[in-house]
Image (cartoon, rainbow, N blue to C red; front, side):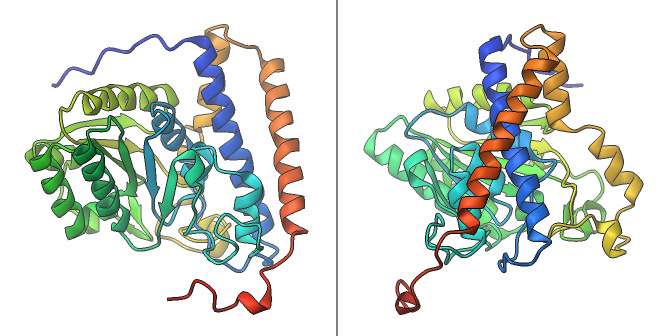
Length: 331
C-alpha cells in the first residue's frame, strides 16, 4: 500500500481563516438555495452544498496572480476565490449588478479582480482553457498557476485527455482538481467507468503527479493543494488532485432528491454523507486544537450570516438590465 504523505502543522490563524471562508461559502450557498425555491431566480442553478471544502482548501493554497476556472457547479469556487456574495445573488436574480450583468446566470460567473476568470456549463471546457492560461504563463516565464475544477464525469471527455497530455509534454503549471461526487447527474460511477477504475492512475499514465484526498477534510485538501502547487511553481509539470466528496442536493435545483421522489440514490446514503459535513468537521478540529471555542465560532457564523443576508436583500432589490441593452454583447 502506498504511504500517505506526511501531514503538516497548519497554523491556528490559517485554520481559522479557512474556516471563515468555508462558512461564507456554506452560508451563502444555503441561503441562495432557500430563496431559489421561491422561483424568482429563473436561471438553472447547480448548488454545491456539501462540497465546500474542496474549493476553500485549493484556493487557500494559491497566490495573487494565480487563476481559477470552474464548471456548471461554480458557486463554491467563485465565493472561495473572494467573489462578491452581492454580485452572485444579483446574477441569480438577473440584475444588472450581477457579476455577469445578469446575463450569465448561475453557471457563467466571473470575478477577474480576485483571479476567478470564468465558469461554464459545457462539460470539460475550462479544463482546456486553464491549460491555455498555464501555457501563457510558461511562455512568459511567469510563476503563476492555473487551476481547473471539474467533476469526475469530465474525466470521461476527450478534452480532459488532450489537455493533460499537452500539459505534460509542455510541463505546464496547471492543477487539475477533480471533485469526485460519485454521480454524473443521476448516473453513478458503476455505469460509467469499469470496476476498479482509479482516476489518479489514469492521470499518472500521462506522467502527472496525482493525489487522492478526502474532499470533506478541509485541512487535507489544503495540504495536498499546497504540496502540488509548490511542485508546479518549481516547474515539475502539471498535477491532478482527486477530492472525494458528495453533493447534498439534487443535480440542478434546491431540493433534496427524496423530496422529488427520485430513487437513483437513497435518503440514507445522502444523510450518511451529511454526517461527514466539512463545516462541522472543520469546527470540531479547531475546537480540539484549542484554536477557538464554540462561542467564538458561533459569533463568526452569526456575523457572516448577517453579511450574507444583507447582500442578498440588496441584490434582490437591485435594478434589472436596461431593456435597451437586450442585444448588447450578444454574438
